[in-house]
Image (tube, rainbow, N blue to C red):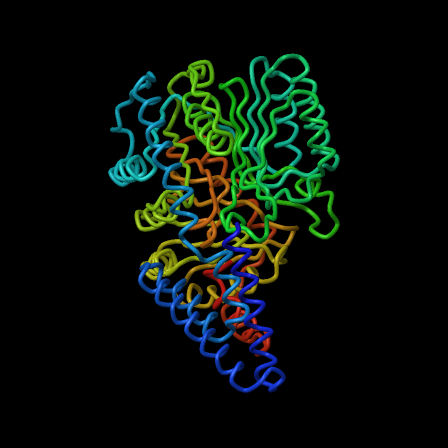
Length: 503
């Protein structure tokens, strides 16, 4: 953090001296010296970025920003662009996580199943997902799709009230409004009853969460931790690496993951958003073990407390179910870009259809090319996207990618009933992923995310039916009409796209 504060101070001083130097307020020589200094600084940082062999679009974006707007680019780079903090902080986490995965799964009993009921493409995807994520694929797991806030939060509250041993909760956004307070009261009640309650929130996403709200929980015995917290948060490199996960584990037997944070807007109570369309999922059985392990390793990372006890990692085993389930964690601690590469593999393995729903569509070249080629080859490629934004910059950037997809024959739908926040990818109506990851570069490279890979489960069929129902509340973008947009809007989309690797 000190390095980042110093960088901001230097950038401010460079701006002041450079500005006044231009107008001869401190003399021609001083202005020249500052100009040379700032130019050399920009060149040096650009060389560092270049030699790090990052994604080409990210490299070009940073270099252009530094070259064209050095006064803005320098502090932004020191806050958001450095890889030094990530390597120093997360390499250790990655090693600890992998060791924990190997140790826990070695001792765990697994239900085996003959893979003959899965197609060759599905078996190949399973092998790849297993190697990418290094987490097991389970066959004794029950999953159920929860649509929107009413169904999700009613289920969550019901399961929380049943807790007998522990409650583990991890959210990107948690608000102290009506639904947040309802959950808080149960957590406090359970903690006072002697049940272990661990609560983790992201310091950026939940920055508005009041200290009084958190103190009430701590005073009742709830263990509360902020993920990525810093004394001066927005002058710290940590602000760029956010824990976007939404995880709840109850008694080691019940788990919930998906797109819903905790807030009244997710119950469609915010007039600005209107109806909030989202998708969550409840998990029972073997796969809860991986979900629990992800939470416990995040907890270890922030607190130094290791609680990998058998009582937390021995879920009740469900009978062999109808398909396969894998819980997949992804983040800046894993250089394999797990979810990005999984999405790519799912798209390229499709034989009939690729259906995608996302509130932010900012793909990298690999994903964009995979979608374009799928559409060009005659597959049914559909993208469901909100008609109105919650954030304007990602909204404009997303629209800049639609033209090339429409040209290849993909269908893009705008959801008009309210705000679409579901994060789904469905392949051939049989394979799907649901979770916290958007189809954007932040989810691919910067955020900590968690998704579930589902193959031939009842939940996939439910997702297909829900997707088809959502299309009834959406309008198809017509390519000819899409191309008639005003010049100003085109310019805004192009500018947003230029910045998309930094979003």
